[in-house]
Image 1 (cartoon, rainbow, N blue to C red):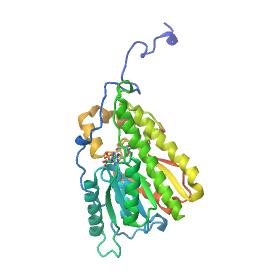
Image 2 (image 1 turned 60 degrees about the vertical axis):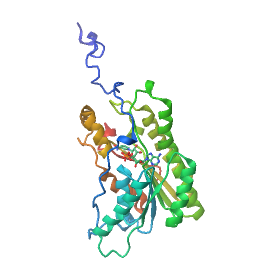
Image 3 (image 1 turned 90 degrees about the vertical axis):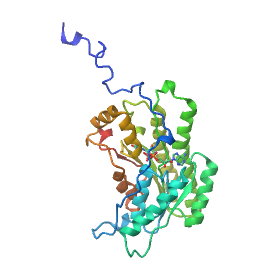
Image 4 (image 1 turned 135 degrees about the vertical axis):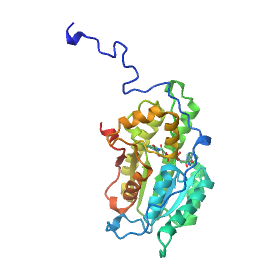
Length: 318
Ligand SMILES: NC(=O)c1ccc[n+]([C@@H]2O[C@H](COP(=O)([O-])OP(=O)(O)OC[C@H]3O[C@@H](n4cnc5c(N)ncnc54)[C@H](O)[C@@H]3O)[C@@H](O)[C@H]2O)c1
């Protein structure tokens, strides 16, 4: 038989499942009750004498971080505090947001003995998918902090279902948090900035899933939500450029949080597959987002707007 006439392995039914495809047997619903407890934040900063650009400093800025009580949001909030910003942690879990706010201040004081100014960090309740809740928390933050200059939208979640079986109420909930929540906070903060005629920088936490389709776990609505976040960021960047409000998107790849660690412990095959697709050969650590978020919030990125910054170990390059 001539070489070109031989059936390709796929046609013979070989290697099924080993291709870059989703696997409809993987189902991982998101259940808030099973999320592991987040370790208290650890020291990350402290006073140092290494030279760096002053434009990276966030002294004098006030930032709101949604989903700030845990995971990536909490670590990014710490990066902002270490860089001198006052921060409001906004989350469904008010108790945890308040606890972590105190912890961030404590760590800052321990690392900066004798600091002439200690950042103010507060914790607040909000359901980001509810417009009344967003409106109310923004006025609470403004009354406690006086103003808002930066927004980081990290509230969001993912879950895995074959699209054919994905319950529509769960899809709506996911889009409500990931997309509506981002939109409501962005417009609320932009309105405040425009009223003050002040410049500002907004950072959306999207995902590389807004640009590629993950395998093998099926997650079409999540991927679509992050594609929406990405294009929302670009659209608002253009719409608000006249007001000196920048909007950028950070797109993390696979990051090792307490939650992903739990998923990987329960589904070890996923970790091997994921890592095999990452050029750097390892998952990211939440601290890998500290530099990117500070850069995008600060004046160091003054001419950067509408950008999506992938922090994915090279995943989306291949
Ligand atoms: N962990 C990853 O590997 C990864 C990768 C790419 C993108 N992301 C994105 O990063 C963001 C944060 O993810 P994470 O891994 O830190 O998740 P996480 O579950 O550890 O933290 C999310 C936080 O958001 C809060 N939250 C959820 N729904 C909310 C709502 N309706 N209103 C207010 N707060 C709400 C939760 O209480 C929690 O504190 C998400 O948008 C996620 O899609 C995560």
